[in-house]
Length: 187
Image (cartoon, rainbow, N blue to C red; front, side, top):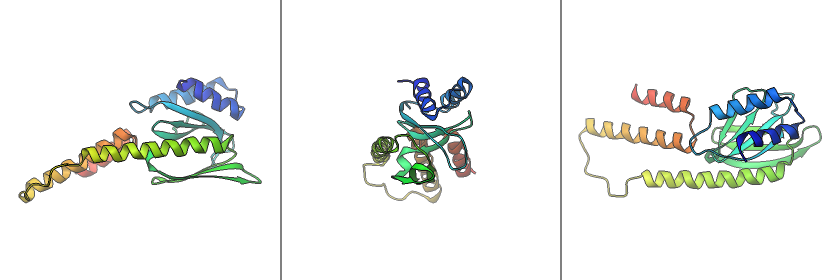
């Protein structure tokens, strides 16, 4: 399954037959795809701030909410800490996603529980991969003797830059967020 098929399925479930909206969603997603990112699942949902339904897309790196070709609302999978499904009288099945980046609520989700299970599995796998990447980046040898202050500051800066790069590679940071954080470190 490719991006177009996945987004078409989600918009079909949402009852939105507009080719323009589908094409805009595909273009938006393709413009923000991380290296190695692949589509996993999709369904239709409504964000509380929007009246019409959009597409809720799960990828190997993140959860995206797409609507009307607007920039996607991304939630990095390794940041997801909790996924719940509730049923309400007015909003149907509600998917609540708690992440380190904030809490997200999606209402009137079609087939919410199967989607939530895939999201939980993807988040667990992403966290495991992220932790393995951090462990691989950590020095295995004992720390050398303390260096002069100037060299220590440079090594600390290098460590922070490497951690930022690892977060970007893992999909936890967008290119824009990475650039801003890097500029703050470099002054």
